[in-house]
Length: 277
Image (tube, rainbow, N blue to C red; front, side, top):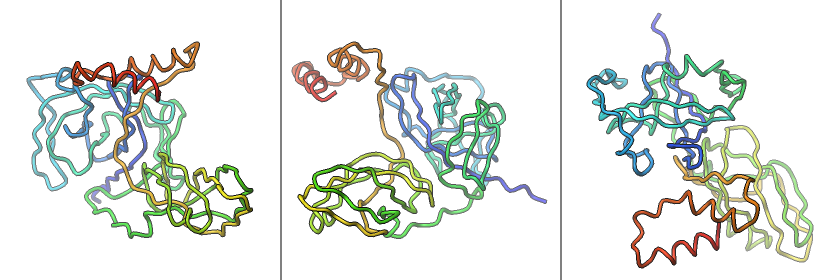
């Protein structure tokens, strides 16, 4: 029998170091050997970290067409509390931004659990499976209804309060949650903007503020917010080591690359970052 290889999309953060990572949705591919990444998915400054080797892995796509590699690069991968360095082959074309092949799976994945929708790492940490497909199959197109989140249960909001509410959405992966104008128009409520990792069929939380002076009752299934998928989001590591808010803001400023900012604008940009850090 021909083996069936599967692809598991998971949430993870990648970057050159722990201080500056990018939230992404890489794909664990049980039919791929090396780990592969698109050039367009790399952080800025990747050219300086490229490993040029005389021999590269032989890479072909699902149709057996060869894919040429531009080089190799090492990135830090953090997922569900597990962290490791991964060597990636750089390519110009790929169906997904990034593939994690068996070179990583055999060393760091303890179990793939499709029925539980989890991937368990060798450190016993685990992350949700956002999507599972047979290799080479097309992903089902989502309907416009999937681009909203609905209330998972009936909820009563006291006046002038903010509440974390359980919602559900069929859209998988990392999504940006945005305010819903109709909710504000009809109920004087506003949904907070934010980033969420959504697993189909599982609940997650969004914050909703009741801006009115009256109790507001929201029925189960009420649309609270539109969502849009995002493949990668830049993030910075902010630790609790800073002794004051000023020191914390300075720590954030030190992690931001301002090399491309014109000299005449640099003081204003630094001041803006410090003010909002």
